[in-house]
Length: 234
Image (cartoon, rainbow, N blue to C red; front, side):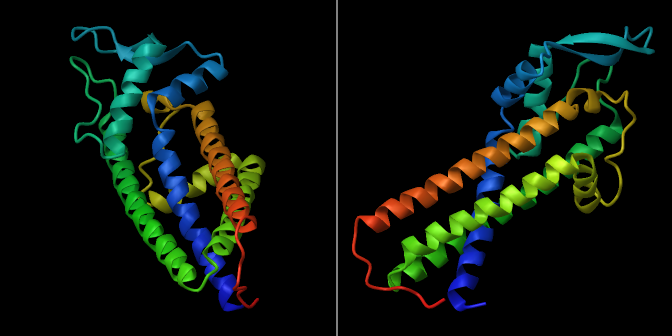
């Protein structure tokens, strides 16, 4: 592998990490939950809730979409670090202690991802500045963006072919303690069913693909509009 190709790969990985984390934060918003619910024809969920303090036995209780989005908002702002307060309920608990513990771990993973995104920004920026001093920054950005898009497409194809397996593998890697396994009647599972995770994965992936191609296209247009006096070897 030549030095230039190595630089392209490093830039592509850094750009992919930065872009995917940033877009994951964007897609954690209330608008995304509402959009995915609408696309899947969901206007209400069913939680297992106690009838009252006097009768705490859980029973199936319909939850309107607005309430579900408010729960999502509370959890999303907590795990992304925008709030220090996890989702709470007044009266009978909606979520179990195990669910709270898992979401605390999710918050830690998001924090690590945000740190990785900052490092990705620094690495990508350094590579671009270094390439700029030698006259090939636009070529680096164009090639690196295309490679980053290809990496994400590869991950996307794997996700389409084996979403459940990859989803489980992701959790086993980032939550090795195993506290992500909940019964089907878990309210956290009911709040975040399969259609949500499939939609978020697709949304982030397609958004990044479009972003990467836009960046590559902008770099290509800029290259065609000015003379280039340096072509890196390889």
